Image 1 (tube, rainbow, N blue to C red):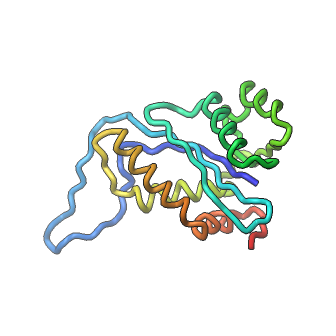
Image 2 (image 1 turned 90 degrees about the vertical axis):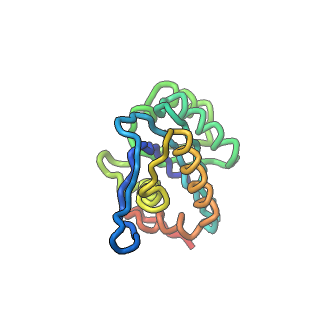
Image 3 (image 1 turned 30 degrees about the vertical axis):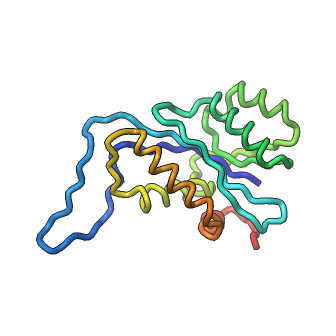
Length: 180
């Protein structure tokens, strides 16, 4: 079973409370009026024996996620997992595009299910985005999008080695899943 979602990291930092010595106000310098971003697509995968949870992701600096990029990610996902895939995702227009539909028809081992509209809390990947934006990437004000991409890649890779945290995203979702 695979849960898939897309998000974006903006140059403007997500502000969180921080500490500093008494009398020294912490300053956060950022680039003003920057519209650069890093788009990201990720999948939380649960293996059939349900004892292993892992994360796959792909960053796309300076661009939006399109049907072409979704199909490319699904191709890599299919090659990586190699087994029949039950894909659960939201109703993003790119997911319902002709190109993605044609890609899925060519692979009979991929079965897709759409989440209900306006229900992001059902997708465990949304909790991944929340964790990344409010914890390791909070208060980060990079000078350019490439630095933001490097930080996002580093922190996403660290999550790949934290299966208990990934499992907590699944357990926090109100979907009825029984995981060991």
